[in-house]
Length: 470
Ligand code: SF4
Figure (cartoon, rainbow, N blue to C red):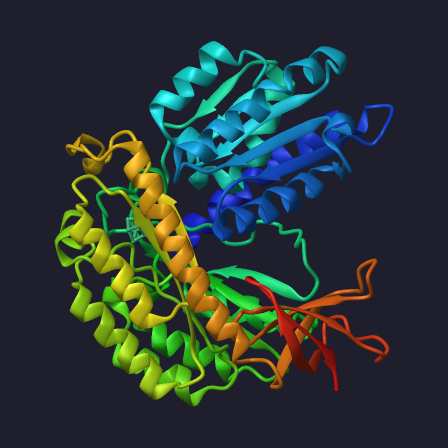
């Protein structure tokens, strides 16, 4: 369902209050303060979801555990984008068995995309009997109810069939960072790229109300947050269903009007939805950082068609051209899938030539991994693993050449950096430029964490710049 009405949402979150007080009553009887531990696998959206699970756990009376061994509630917030991420989460789940044997009060839950798939839930039921509950991404606000059921009735629960696509506001949040904050603006995806499970595990696109987003950003800015990242599977299609009479470009423009010393990032964008107006809004608003993550996935129009990406190589390059000519200091990064079913050497050469032409700062590349239930998993794939690995190493070495030339061009220049972390044992602070480039730098200035500083670049590595404050 699209954005559900406010009264339904309010009822939903209100409904949890009775469970919250029942859980608190049970936890208060414990001879010690119970602890929780949440581990996050996957993307920024999962990190943002984990911050809400964490906030909810605290509202129930749990305190944060420093490590797994001390916890009375463990939640793994899982990812399904690649098989590797699922196997890692399952292997970590396997390691929890001995903790359950040591602590009879321990509750273990698996959350998120991986357990929004029937097959994985069946695996958990049969192979991991010590897992107490599983819940899909849309159950976030119902953690009190789930825990109440586990604690009062001592039974295992699987909340996977109850997909609810409403948006619930008011879930407590415990943010990990005091400088940078994530703000989800939309959930789900309508694009059905043939390799991707997101539409099946996170549901159809729905956008949060503009006022709810603006209020959240205002409150973060007044709490001193310096960098806000707007999140969504496809932020560019925010408001596409007309719920808010506001598209993504307008939303960005409205957020930039909020007073305060903060900057704005967003992710992820779909190339087909980057409008001329969005480019104009970025150009005219210095609060929007000069970084655009624009996943291309392949440089071959034929493969893009097989992926159902709905743009061509030429269309993508045209968007890049518009971005670069409107915002000359824009930094571009991308995602690429190597070895998609049917990708020939010629297709792959087109990917290489596109990477060379665009000159990305970062390329997040992955060898294609079939996801059960997606159309691509049924496509014929006769390229061997050896060939795919070889293509991957060609792509990485081309990117290495590109990035060496790009990073070299920064030497001698001064860049504005948001300092995120204090000095390490070698005396280097950590920060990011507007273009999201990692910078390690030395500084004699006093308290600079959470502040913008000018850093003169004197050397570089493959993935970072080094320098000193001026
Ligand atoms: S745009 Fe495509 S790749 Fe991105 S989440 Fe949607 S279906 Fe998946």
